[in-house]
Amino acid sequence: MPKEHANWSPYDNNGGTCVAIAGADYCVIAADTRMSTGYSILTRDYSKICKLADKSFMASSGFQADVKALQKVLASRHLIYQHQHNKQMSCPAMAQLLSNTLYYKRFFPYYAFNVLGGLDSEGKGCVFTYDAVGSYERVGYSAQGSGATLITPFLDNQLKSPSPLLLPAKDAVTPLSEAEAIDLVKTCFSSATERDIYTGDSVEIVILNAHGVRSENEQLRKD
Amino acid sequence: MFRNQYDTDVTTWSPAGRLFQVEYAMEAVKQGSAAIGLRSKTHVVLACVNKSNSELSSHQRKIFKVDDHIGVAIAGLTADGRVLSRYMRSECINYGYTYESPLPVGRLVVQLADKAQVCTQRSWKRPYGVGLLVAGLDESGAHLYYNCPSGNYFEYQAFAIGSRSQAAKTYLERKFENFTGSSRDELIKDALFAIRETLQGEKLTSTVCTVAVVGVGEAFNILDQATVQALINEFEISGEEGPTNESVAEEAGGESGGAATEEGGAATEQETAPMDI
Image (tube, rainbow over all chains, first blue to last red; front, side, top):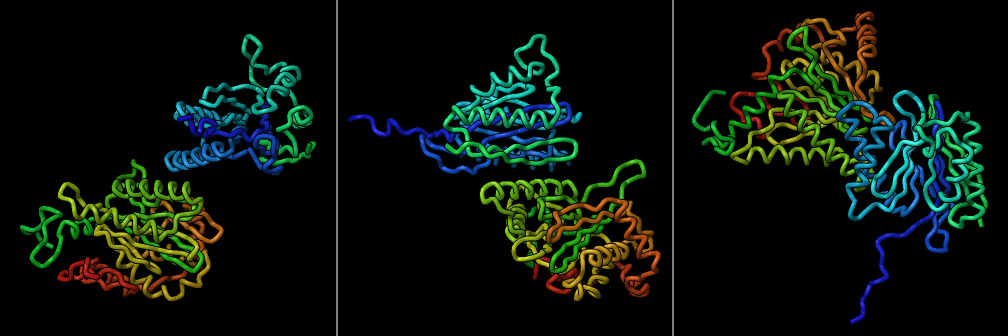
């Protein structure tokens, strides 16, 4: 009897790229809005960025059904935290929670490649980058998803100081201004769009600083 | 109520068909400090008296936020109240997770009542010693429910529980017909007047009471002391009196023989079993 359902997988990759950059008093979290499956486009207008807390935003590429489930679990856990502690979770606390939640499913992982961005308790920008099972690190900048391999070397070149490749490990924020960082992000996405078929349509950019949150949208190539 | 041979276990009926342990649990509610609730078409206000044991200690929390659209005020064993609030919060979170919409208040209240009933039918449990005023907003409007240790629950336009709550109930009975059309601020003012009744002449300041509101476009929140004090000052400066003083003196007798509130409140006469509604 030949094997049946050999080619069925519980996972699918919906593609897309996420980037985050931490500044001295701001954080930029960006993700493209294209959702694909195989060589087809499902929609050009899907947000991969989720607000987990007042000062924590998560951008995730990978399997969006798992991403949605992960976002719901974190939202519920955050509500419980607020009831118990009477305050919002800080970004580093949320970072640890995300790591634990991912590892909880170590043997049937969330197919989600996450980047968490926000402001820490001192108001400085912070970015945390993850793998699918919860290994994480605080960094000055990060890219995840299908265009990550195209973007990361470019960011290493442009943002020398917060690079995790430098030794000794230094303060993990870029000296760039907020406007310069946003411009850098737009450049990253337009370059990645050129060569990565899963990245394009438009990029949603969320900027978090002491004054609050705002969102920008920049059109990208649609081919 | 007096000690008798049928009141040791919650699972023992008396010959008159009463469960004394449950009735004793309802006594615990009457001993707690007062909590009141009132609702209009669009808002529900909860208020409670906060007396601390000594000047050195902090007040006990008697009002809990359960979700953005639901809050609860308790009277009785506050520890039991805390545990039930945690249960309610968990139910709201789980419902929101599954249905991505807020848990309707009536559903939560039934779940709470069923949970209380279980404790009246297990020999190894005791009834919860806390009464809960559940205030919430859902698609069918603004709601105020009272859950008691017996596992019964009722919906109210306005209600008061705890010690000296009869004074507040009398005030509310006088005014409740206007509550449906009240504005948010009028409702809060009525709540403060009702609380003042239970204080029996003691000065009403924001240090002895807590007020919380939930309404259309307003998530459940507890008003901060400064806001409450400002409201108190407003009506004290304008010299407004709630009810007249004579009726207040009559109510000083407390719960025994108190009149029932409108809309199906529990009778508190000695001979009728409180659960006979």
